[in-house]
Length: 380
Image 1 (tube, helix red, strand yellow):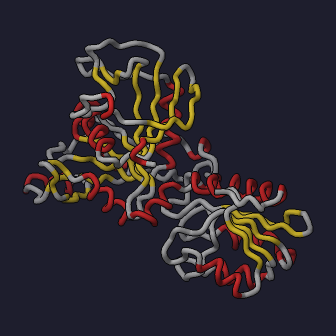
Image 2 (cartoon, rainbow, N blue to C red; image 1 turned 60 degrees about the horizontal axis):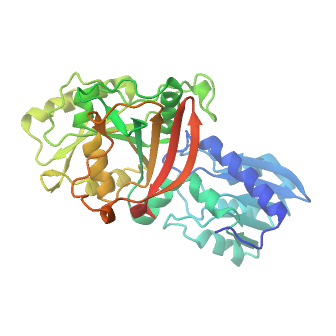
Image 3 (cartoon, rainbow, N blue to C red; image 1 turned 30 degrees about the vertical axis):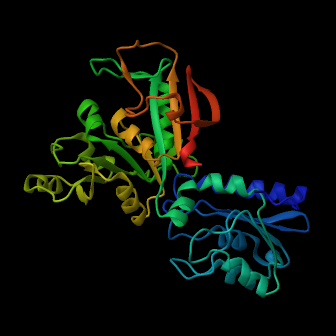
């Protein structure tokens, strides 16, 4: 919750820091998106944002831009400054060395290596510290990093496209294209911010998707023209490792591919490794891949945000297991009829009290289609 003691200046400068942090939306993975603004005597003297893992943190870039004007300044940073040596030196040391007099942080860093210790070290050195300014907005910028650090699983976003009557494919399986080109382009931005894209063998069989980011660097804020666009890890749930080696998910330009199935991997499945896939053997739950175990494994690989682009079976299983944090539903303005296929397979929902509640966060038009962002009740 936002610190109610913050004045108008604090709110304005933190809002600026948050806008800067968004420039790292498509580049910082697996690190958090962080912005920093340095203010002295009511003037911005330096600012910066974290761009990529291994690169300078936002605070150090802002300090470098401010130079000697950093002495006596207030630092507005969207995440608590780090206090440990990782790929880069501690930002707390840099702030102290520059003579910053006050630090305002939007939120405490959920990383157990920091978790308030950065702010405490600043306080101990005589720096005035304030935390909680625009905290909700800062949390919304890094849902995957926060969840991975706090709970050991990534943030799961389930993307679906349907007709206005909730149908995803005709009874024959025909589904291209339900939504407009504008909606499909919008999905590319969701993919570009994701660490991984998850699908199932049913979708692989029906659509043979590539599941890559098809936007150029010039279309993604924060990237330089011609820069290589980061491709999310493609994750395919295939219990028996039966994916053919000519599946488009194995296309090398589309990025790395992980195929998750039940242990042990059959000898025939090893052909997929030769085709460039990585194999992961999961424990079984009811004869299927244990999805929670798979998500825990992805978190250990520093996967922050998983985008699910799957059919009704896998999407329904994740939803019923309480593993979906966010639903993005594109509704096209047409009807496909009661024989067409539905959004989710949800066995066991027989009574009105069994229904799954949703909290709608956002409604907007994308081209002719309606985009709904909702949070399942179980994810709150």
